[in-house]
Amino acid sequence: MRKMLLAALSRLLQGPAAAGRTASRVMVASRNYGDFASEAKFEIKQCDLHHLEAGPPTTAVMTREEGLQYYKTMQTIRRMELKSDQLYKQKIIRGFCHLYDGQEACCVGIEAAIKPTDHVITAYRAHGFTYTRGVPVREILAELTGRKGGCAKGKGGSMHMYTKNFYGGNGIVGAQVPLGAGIALACKYFAKNEICVALYGDGAANQGQIFETYNMAALWKLPCIFVCENNRYGMGTSVERAAASTDYYKRGYFIPGLRVDGMDVLCVREAVKFAAEYCRSGKGPLVMELQTYRYHGHSMSDPGISYRTREEIQEVRSKSDPITLLKDRMVNNNLASVEELKEIDVAVRKEIEEAAQFATTDPEPPLEELGHHIYFNEPPFEVRGPNQWIKYKSVS
Image 1 (tube, rainbow, N blue to C red):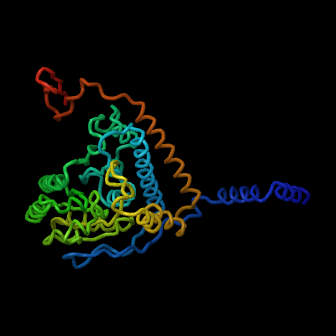
Image 2: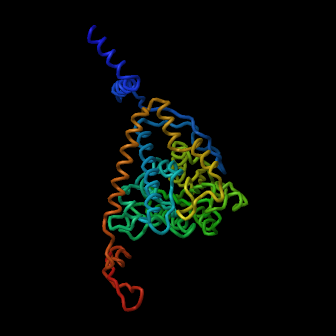
């Protein structure tokens, strides 16, 4: 009894803050994995349909492991993009740079719904997809800083990153969509039950080559999901000022379509699962519109507030942020604790800082390697330099 009284007196003398810290430590220590639910069921927004009798489900089951993985992946992409912003402003990253923060639920939801053997091709806002397709953060940041350890050996930069079954990163507006149809044609030709996800933005949605691709894909019943990431602005032009019809999921006309809440990772996951099954069944392509939002400007040269207000951006952050939405779902349904998610945040920040350190100290590729990697599995040959007297050797 005397020991208990002395302990209570000690806590009293140390003040309420110390007592609160002690209680917090006891509470965290008392939580173990057995205290959490293994899974939970969530209601998700119903998708708008075009030429479809039924669509994706309006409920989704998420396990604790899936939730933690989605959360870590989205936080990693968010922190990676914020670090890219910082390195760009320090003039360590140069050239074109388009950031993905705000749209993380799109790439994470898509990757959760498809197989590693499926194929993805996107436009120049590609950092998030590069990471979800399996490229480590350090290789992405090293590519952004033009270093030898980058995923494209420092030669691609922000817009041209690649890995197995991921075809970039493409700089020409809308040009990746017909390429995606070509990949889908290969999927059908080799009969491996694979699909291609071809992504483009609302700004590219008015490109003529996209409509030509729709026609070919429908005629040949290609296993392709055409995904329009509608972040509401094509560069500095709002969708209402750029498009006579903003129902991008109906743009395929003769191709079925879905309009999806692109700020909800579960809604994206279930919609893409539905679309992937549709394509694998031999029914042909499907058009999907993901309604999302980018927090940064179009590129690093765009402050992003000349055509929209700071209040608009803040409202989206406060009401629809994909990471906050997932965090609240997990905590409120006993899939994770706030403390556990904070530990993930700390680990992610550490990983990003270490990756940035690598990306700023790794050597740049030597000039003599400028002509390398033009072709795959071909004998070496010479490439002309800036003038006819300068030659570079190209090695596959």
